[in-house]
Each structure stands twice: as C-alpha cells, then as structure tokens.
Amino acid sequence: MEFKVSSSALYSRLTAASKVMGSKNSMPILDCILFDVKDGIITITASDSEKYYITSAPVIEQNGEARFCIPAKTIIDSIKELAEQPLTITFNEENMKVEGTHSSGSFSVMAQDAAPYPLAKKVSDGATRLIMPAEVLLNGINRCLFATANDEIRLVMNGIYVDIAPDHLIFAGTDGRKLVRNTVHSIKSGLTAGFILPKKVCAILKTVLNKDEEKVEILFDSDKATIKSEDMIMHFRLIEGRYPNYNAVIPQSNPFKATVDRVALASALKRVAVFCNQSSGLVKIELSNNSMKLTGQDNEYATSAEEFLICDYNSNPISIGFSCQFLLEIANIIESDTITLEVADPSRPGIIRPVGDNTDDEVLMLLMPMRVED
Image (cartoon, rainbow, N blue to C red; front, side, top):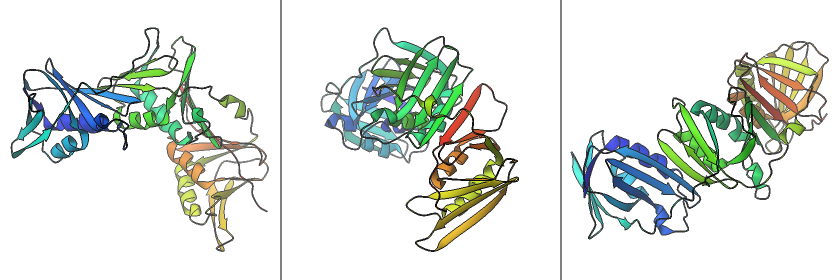
C-alpha cells in the first residue's frame, strides 16, 4: 500500500505522540509508533503501557490500507530536517519494509507487525464526563504543576487534584511545603466528583494542548481517564487514593498584608538567591512602613545580600523566612502585575495572591515558613 502526507503535519504529530513514550519500555514493541492508515486518515498511537496518546493526520493520497509499527526514533529523525513537502510512504506487507520518498531523496526502514501492540484500556460506560475550555485546563496545570511532589510513599501528592463541585472547579497541587489552589467559578458542571491527574500526564498536556482549542472533554471512572481535544486523545491511569484536605491548611485570616510589584520582587529574589545558604535557600523578609527588605546570607562562606522594595504595608513590623527558590517560582507563575503577601506569626503559612478583578478565576498560593536565625 502507498499513501502521501504532508511532512510537517506528520512530524508535528509524531513528536507530540513520542512524549508519552518511556526511555526503558517493558515491551520492545513500545519503542515503536503504531500507524493505522484507513479512510484517508493516518492514526498515530504511542504508549508506555500506562499512557496512550492517539492523534491523526489527513493523507493527500492513499492506495490501500495498512497497520504497522515503526521505531519512533528512526521515523522522527528521518523526517526531522525535511522542509514542508509531500512525503510518499510505501509499505510492503510481505517483507515488512517501509520506504519514504521526498523531493531530495528517500529512506527505508523495517516495520514490525502491529498485532502485538497493546490496546488502551478505556473508561467504563458509566464514566463521569466533564467539558471545559482548553485554556482553563492549561491554566490549572501551569499554576499547580510546580507544587506537586515526587513522593514514593504518598503517591496521591504526585499529581494535580481536580475537585469538581456543582458551581465551580478547583485545581489543587501540594507537596507539603507549598500549595496552589486555583478556583474556576465559570465552570458549572452540576457534578460532585474529583480525580488526581498524574504529574507526567500534566507535563505532556502542557506541551501538546493549545489554548486556542475551544473545548477539552474529560471522561473518568475510579481508576482510568480519557482526555479528548480536537487534535488528540489520551488514555491513562489515574492516581488512586484520597487526596489530602488542602483547605484545612489554608489560614483564614493572616493579619499582615503587603502589596508589591511582582516583577520587582522576582528580580530582587534572583539577586538575593545567589547569596542564600545553599542547603536551606532561606530568604528573610522584613516588612515595615511601606518597605520590604529581603536578606540572604550564607555564614559558612561569609556572603550576604540585601534588597529593598517599596510596597504597600502599614501594619506592625514583622519578619518571616521563606524558601527563596519557592517564592521565586510563585512570583514567576502568577500572571498579575502586583501580588499580595499575607503573613501572620513565623509559624503560620504565608499566602500569596494576584491583585486583579477576575472573580471567575481565583488563584491562591501557600508557602510554609522557614525558621529565621536571629
């Protein structure tokens, strides 16, 4: 059989699909990408046995149907440097040879039988269905992903919790030291449910989803989920277990509040970080009379730095310590021009919020304090 396809369209879909593949697969066939050419469409499947990514591209011309597997690295590298042009691919079922022909040359590779390629386990018929704009899902992932854990014992922390209420949707991520809660009031599903989106799945979705896509459909049951967009379908296993009560650790009222320019804070933190203790990463924040002082020091190497920022603060003087790295990550992820830092005594978590008027999309970030040596 033979078909002709756009080289750039094929390459973009192959590279997206390859992101789910593992570096060390339990089955040799999973080092390959599955091609299924039928009815004018090339369906491309990649998997690591737990996650399946399925996408498709239209063919320009087609003569016959075929289903075969090609080593992913070989096919991707072979068309990587091609300019946009029609690429003709011929598959000989008798000797399992695949030949590619383009304007400046050709290549050939041995294919493998598609029969051993494992099929995705799909969600049950009674699966819960949730539809949202792609931008909402991407925003939730972008804001929460950095706060998720890499914990071999508490596996539920290794993902983003999607907490579905009838009149709103919450994305939450925490590793026990930092926490993000993104409440989206514009999603009114009428459902009460929840699931934990695995960290690796989130990282893939972050690279393959497009904010311009209108809708994303999520189907999930007790242990599996499927995410569908205009360009792809992804099947994967959910993280099973009970997610911690993230609301319980959020202080209801931190009395000391300072409003500061986000970009200025991020720049100051970058400069101070150079001089912070390498093991603790502690930055000391002192608030007093519309002033914020950042101090980083490493007594072992006798280095230190201070930064002064103008802020809106009119309460009693207070000092508190945070991880400079985590605070910088938060400042870089929040999208508003100014942020509010809400603190209490040095034993209670600090709350960072964006300053803005988007009541449909609320973002709260929590950071546990660190002990400051006097």
